[in-house]
Figure 1 (tube, rainbow over the protein chains, first blue to last red):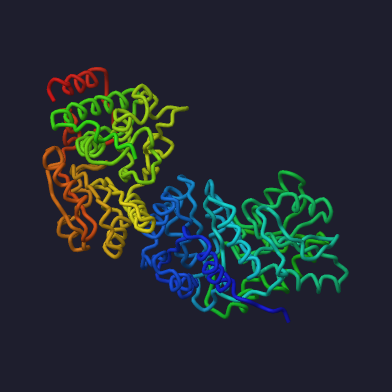
Figure 2 (figure 1 turned 180 degrees about the vertical axis):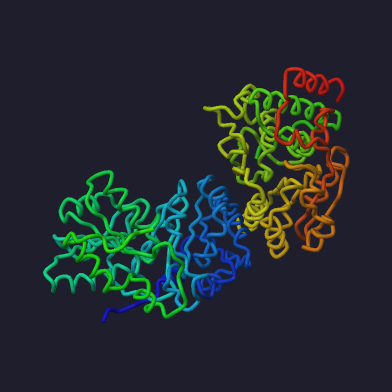
Length: 319
Length: 282
């Protein structure tokens, strides 16, 4: 059994630590600070914490003004609610190319019981399309901590960091350091590659064990840096394993699968089969039940990767 | 900070001459570009003139001074007015205004931060007040005493983002922020009272906890005294309703929704506009 840890707890705790070292670090939230964990920062540094109420447009534009005045700005809410400010992010933050870091929580179907209204599965695509925006989906608490440190210490441009509500298995060891555009291969393999994002990485690793028992040696890559993406690792996988499966707790449109297919299509065309949400909204249920319900669970990864490896016909039409 | 604004104090007569010069630039810019928004540029010109030539603490030689006053042109389509004001004030040469809306010029169609003196890129309505409040909060954190002015359009305040920001301004008592509403009564599709009336703006903004003043936005004495009141007011954020005339100064553009987003239609209209905007008449 893998050890799990909360990514948002890691975020909140790292913010507090960095707040002590960086006097220009300010944090905004929109009435969800106890859930996003920015409340930890607010308690320690009340003068530098702004709870903007349930007013995301105000949060984003105020964040822009703070960044225009030299502040290092973190703005947090649930991923789904930040999407209503797409245009504020586009105009006020990305066009001005400002030092605003959107670290959002409760993304994807792992928000579970809250249901379809709260399960954003389009956000990575929406944010990746914005000029100047960079997009990261940390795989675990260790990577989250490293990403937040990287954002403060080494960048001055907009970022979107997608976190979950659920705890995720810890896959990285403590020495891990995030670098933009660099993926991590957690398991090498020569028959097929599974490129995964977020919680799907740990599920892909489990799937790889089953695949191994069936004689299929799968490579598993954690692609946490969605933009910029690790083109080198993708091309290498295409060359060396000949077939790629992508796995994401997100729509297959404009998410990880689309980005990987773009790279493969441009550089070294091989079959790319995408596992993810398909033109559908989510549903209420226990987080981990939903993966099977939407056919993106461990068994599905095994089934699809095996079909892909054996060059069977595509298992279903994609709308 | 070398306070160049105090080297010479502009009289009201001087300011009127400056405003005429800015208005002539506005007409020339939109006519040359064959596009742009003259109506809402001409209506806010007098307010901008007072701010940049008399009230704001700025230095065109040092546009990034952290202590400078800031102005956010939230109604970013009034770019001709802001660009022309900045050029006349000395942030960049007036000859560059001819590049407005043209390729290889920094003078983007809507207000663009790459232009010297511009604080934030704007153009999508409703976002500037939040930016201004963020700057006001930063001043407090940095122990700086600058003032932030945000120019809003009266069509613009139909955007919900504006009212969200009014809430935030009240919560944080940003007394270093002054919003100025260019209340010219006209928006792209027609008169604001027809498209989407905002009932009693003064009462509504006061209801949001802001100190509200109402003035004639073309009367220099009223503009000056309102801004000086807001600079010294310490109990919370301030909001000036400047009643203005859309297309002010060009007879055929005044109160005509057509000229919200259209330049003079032909050479005749262009010449007529310039003939009405004369330095002698100011």
